[in-house]
Image 1: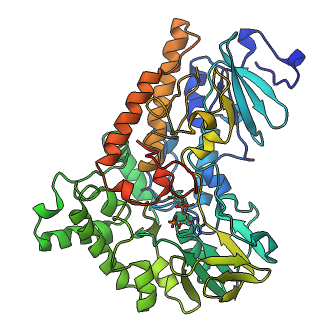
Image 2 (image 1 turned 180 degrees about the vertical axis):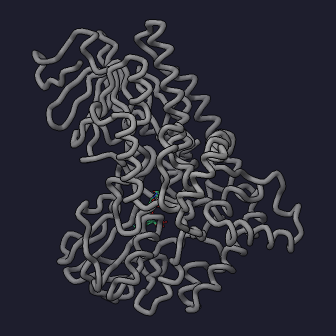
Image 3 (image 1 turned 30 degrees about the horizontal axis):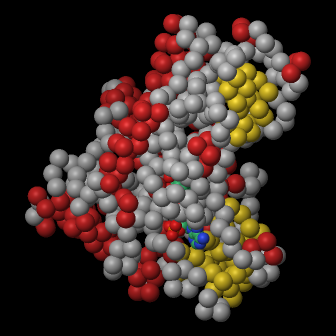
Length: 519
Ligand code: NAP
């Protein structure tokens, strides 16, 4: 059907002989049904994306199960996750199930690192280039590399001189690492840091958390799923109802903001309502099922913060630790940085052999051969340093590839003055290219699979429509991008989100333009 070729003479040039697509497994199945030749190139050795690379201890999803499954009935009718919030092992089982069910493996090449692509005007096709020299032409090109494919390592003085092991959560060794009874440092307290600390804290000989900003963690209320109960739910049509509902809510979950504002309730009603959301139901409900003004009005937001703080402080007996984890004055409005879901994080942090170093008052000076020295002169010795320092998120994934527009400019160059796209799915001067789960889409503000499924459906319909009409070139207009940027900015400015230094707006990466990155 198609022929990879590293030399021009080996390139297959007949139209029928070309792979039409570079895309992700969500698309393969349907596009194949339209009679297209589909090929996926994947850098990892198996499926999973973030769940393949980020296999750090304790890595698990924190969106409500089973809602992160793909919505097709034939995928979920004979698959049930083990827990409400599945761990990476169970997610791996799900990916394998999807591959098998849709016979996807025949169209996927693993260990295939796409480095760049250029649009060939004479053919209206992309020439896609891989690190191993493979070059293929494709009519349609779908980079589906997620929002967190470029990890961030801060330039910490002396890091390379450390004699112990250094691991970044985003590229955790696939063979696992035994960290029992080790002296461990964890730098960073985003979702990756929280989960790593929770898992390693009880096993470590000593664990030191280097915290720059406290994470407003919420109770996960994790539990095992009863397969029989889930089967009953499927039979009663509850899964189908849930999947329908996802398309209608702000963040692609089964729940949405309330119709009422914070001060529409009395203090007693508010207390009861917060208790129900945060403690009884758990998950993201305290964030996304709450009063509709919580993320827009400072006074309303403070009410959420104070309730959250009260609950955290009650779980942390050491007042110094409590003050660092849940300060009296909020460092940023509640929910304007992504909260993580925790199971026993505050109990683990309270263990006597777990310390917190506040990087705001006592930053890291250097890493030595033995450990980490902070500004106060204190050197703590370690066997292992874990960097949970996140990603050049949302734009970094695509911008790191050498994909060039019809003027020869790379995406990185095009976005130097700010990210541009039409509807967070295509870019002007990049014809026949649709990206998934990237900038200016609901991406990081959404339940991932809800966003991805919606985009994959849109791309599927668009390509089918274009193919049916014999249209060989399709490109976003600059005016459409200008309008999308205006609307993204307008929505963003109406919230409290701009007040947090966060990867939602690129302010976690020194020198990166600060702007709203998600729709
Ligand atoms: P992150 O949220 O960006 O967290 C990075 C952490 O490193 C932050 O606490 C940050 O502090 C800190 N940091 C960065 N540079 C630093 C420096 N120079 N010195 C000290 N500390 C520094 O990254 P992440 O935890 O990998 O998570 C990213 C996103 O990926 C999540 O929000 C989530 O969307 C997704 N994720 C999901 C899951 C899950 O669902 N289970 C798990 C992991 C990741 P500041 O806050 O002060 O910047």
